[in-house]
Length: 161
Image (cartoon, rainbow, N blue to C red; front, side, top):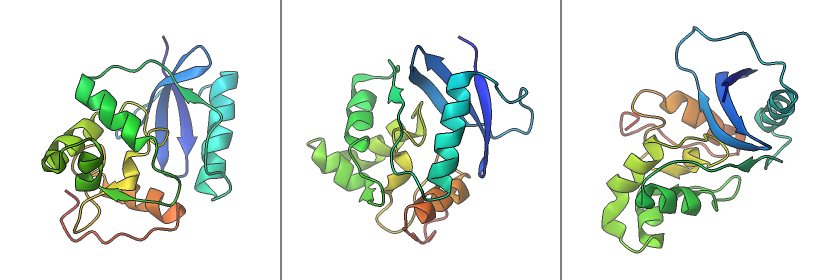
């Protein structure tokens, strides 16, 4: 499967399709990337993501394809996928919904490996005292911008972790 690239207002994203479903979707943190895709599905996804960034779209027509992860990661991804546009939960609240509030750090670890950013809205999971991390430490600016698009303004009081 060839990775496709699309430009978004917050940076370049890489996408991998599996038929009509998305297997991977993530921000490229490096400036080196392939020419933007002309793939019809990628063009539609770019339009939908653009509408999301403009505040005109709250959900996407694409479904998540078969993704890889541990049993726990898959449970976390399934739970986080239920969080609606404009809402947030803390890592502890997600852990509690999975049956053990003490697994908040493990929830964060699972979300660090989210293969389909935005579609599984890990940006909607925040720390109890701030924004929390996004795709590992150092990318909380993107998370904050995604939350602002959804009408949330979360303080970065914990160093973005």
